[in-house]
Length: 533
Image (cartoon, rainbow, N blue to C red; front, side):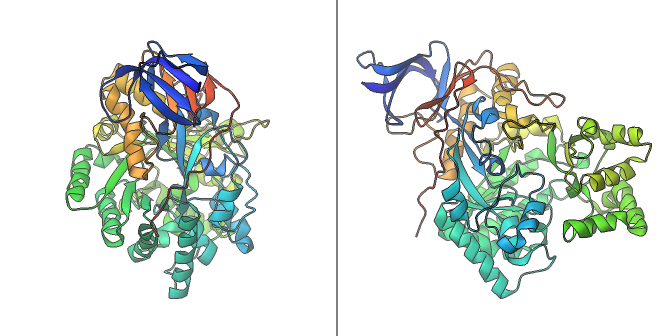
C-alpha cells in the first residue's frame, strides 16, 4: 500500500509539455509511479478530478531566512503553492556572523530581521540550527554578511589578507551546503566592492559548482551597463549567473526590455550560463535608506543619523533627494513622492500605507524633509514600496524563456504578535498572480509554460535534479490547484491575504496545505545539493 495516491488530475509535469490525465502514487516522500493506477491503493487518496497537478513551485528569490527560524510555517508561500524557497538574496544572509560585530549585523539586516538571535558564526552553524519548516530551503551566502564579518562597513577595497578571509567564509558556506553567492551591489556595504573583488569570491563558488546571484549595481539609467558587469563576473569566474528580479526602474528607460533580453540570449550563445528571475508587479520594495545618496549612507547607523541631523548636511541631503540624484542618474532614488508607499514604520505606524507625499501633508513639511525625518524617527528602519516600473516591460520580461519566477517577498511577522506592517503583496501572491492574471485572464503565457517557469526551469538553474518535475523517482513536492479560480488576493492596500485556488500542497509527500488550509506540518528542510570537490 502506498502512502498517498493523487487520482485523476490534469498533470503538468514541469517540462512545458501539455497536460495528461494521470494518477500519481507517492511512497516514502517520492513519486513511485504515474499513470492509470487503479490497481494501487494508499492510506491517503486525493481526488484531483478537474484540478491541475504540478510540481511544487520554486521561489527563485526569497528572503525567508530572516523569518523562518522564528516563524517556520511559511503560510504566505505554501498557500500559493511554493514548496522550495531560495534564501540569502541581494547580499543579505544571516551568516556568516562575526560575534564582535553583532550589532552591525543587526543594523545591516534591520529591514529583514524578524528577531533572530544570531547565535551562530558560520553558515554551517546557521544551517545546522535551521528549524524544520513548511517549505524546503536553498541557501545563498550574502556578500553583505561576508564583507561585514571581515571589514565592517568600510568604503574601500579589501587588503589581500581581508580578501583571503572573505574567500574563506564563502568556501566554508559552500562546503556547508550553500548553493551560491549573492550580491546587493545597489547599496552598502556590497556596493563598495569593485568587480575584481566579486570575481574572486565568485571563483570560490564556481569551484564548488555553485552560482552567482546578483541584485545588480543599477536597475535604472545604467541597467544595461550593470548587466554587462554581471556577465563579466560570470565570464571571469566561471560561475553561472542569476540576475535577480530583472526590471527597468528608471521611467526614462522604459521600453528597453527587448534589448536587455537580447543581450542575455547573446551572452548564452557566448557560453555564459545566465538566467533571470522576476516578480509579477510593477512596484518594488526595500529599505527607504537605500534611496539616500551614497555619501549619506556610509558608515554605521549612528554616523548616518548624525549626518541627517546636521543642518548643513540636511540641506545637502534635501537637495540630492529632490534634484541632485536625478542629475547624476542615480538608480536608487525617489522619482515621485506620490509613488512611494510606507510599508514599515516602527515610530509612525499610522503612516503605513500612505505615500510619502501624503506623509508630507500630514507633517506640514516638504516631501524630502518629511522623508528624512521619518527615517530619523525610525532609526533607518523604514521600508517603502516604489511604483517605478512599466507594466509593458513586466509583461515582456515575463514571456522570455530564460526568466523564472521569484517573489522577492518579505514577511517579518512572528506568530502571536501583532503585525502592523504593510509589506509588498508579492510575498503572498506572486505565483498565483502569474497563473491567474497573466495566464488565465491575459493569456500572456500558456499554462504549461507558466508552470515550467515556476518549476522545471528553476530546478535546472539550481541543479535540483530530484525536484521541479513530476516523474517516477522525483521527490513528491506537489501542488494541486483549480486553474479557473487561482488568483492573488493580496493588494498594496491590504497585503496580508493568502492566495485563492490552491487546494493541496505536499512537501516531500506530506500535506502542508489540505483543502486550502495550512495543516501545521513542517516537513521542509535545508536542501544541500552535492557540490564539486
